[in-house]
Length: 169
Image (tube, rainbow, N blue to C red; front, side, top):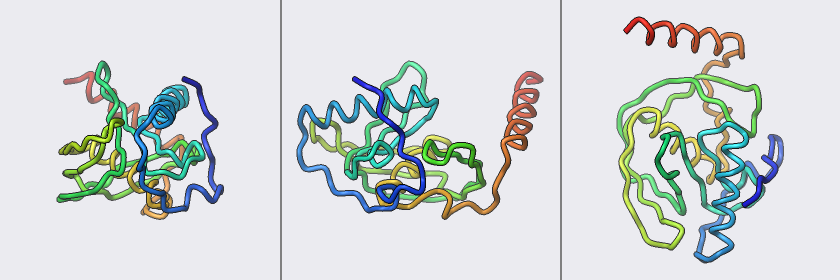
């Protein structure tokens, strides 16, 4: 495994619709492992293949401590409902944060690294992260969906307030 360079905007690969993964081999496994290591090193919760310069429909999300990352190969959105606005950032846009509306409950179908299909339902933050990464695979950047930009200072203050509220509970 190795850490790859995270592609930053305005690189054109970030705005391309990615090709379907058709070969499930060692090269795909290496890509997924490298993406995970790169994401962890970059302090992210998700990463898509175009963010490491590979225009294929592969992404992963990992923020559940002690659990395996969710690998999203050729993902398809099957069900979506509800709406929630929250703040997002992106490894390809360092220092950029903004409010984005996303579905609050989703169901997806995707493939594992061996090519087998699975279904997954997700809500809240997990659903948001999956949708963010799936957008990358269609060349859709989160900045196109931001309704209000948030500064680093505003984000830090929101996090501080949330931590204070959690301590009081």
